[in-house]
Every structure is written in structure tokens, then in C-alpha cells.
Image 1 (cartoon, rainbow, N blue to C red):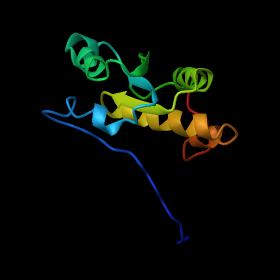
Image 2 (image 1 turned 90 degrees about the vertical axis):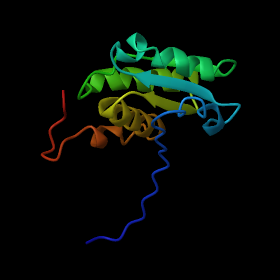
Image 3 (image 1 turned 60 degrees about the horizontal axis):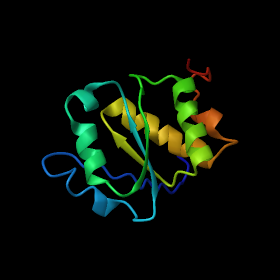
Length: 127
């Protein structure tokens, strides 16, 4: 086994009152990108609640992260992060949104190495 250090500064807020305390978790000067999937966060009103909680902050949105997100979808978000100089990613949704947002963070910060993240264990790039 190889020695290594792992630091994963991911915080997950879940449950009653999580949205109300959201603003406290984000630096006041952050440029925030909210990522989400399909329409459920809109239909349930969760996205509106999050936007209300962050009112007055510099917030952008990226929706449409599908289950088992496509590489192209995530790279569109990476492009937005780079162009808009986003400093904070906020995933609102389930597993695919969370995983996709972690990829977005890695690819945006390590432009030459993101391709290795997108490869499966057998070395073939996912569609």
C-alpha cells in the first residue's frame, strides 16, 4: 500500500434547517455557482429557498446535471466556473449532482489533469 494524505473539504448539510444556516457556510465575498439536476429542486421549491437564503450574494446557476452526468455537461460547468471566476461551488441535489460538482471543482482547479478524473478504472473515457 502506498502512503498518502487526503484532504476533502466537502461539507454536506442535510435536513430541517439546513437551508437557513447555509449563508453562514459561505464566505461573504464568494462568487457562488449553484449546481443542480433536473426540475425536482425547482418543483419542490428548494432552489427558490436556497436563492432566498443567499439573497444579496453573488450567485450564478448551472442546472441540468443528469444522473451519471455526461462529461460534456460537466465541462460546460467548468467553462462557466473559469469564465465567471467562481470561487465557491454549492451542489443542491442528490448523488449525481454532488459527484458532478466534485468533478467540476477538480477540473476547474487542475486544468491539465481533469481528463484522468474522467476515466474509468479500465482506462476508457466515459461518454
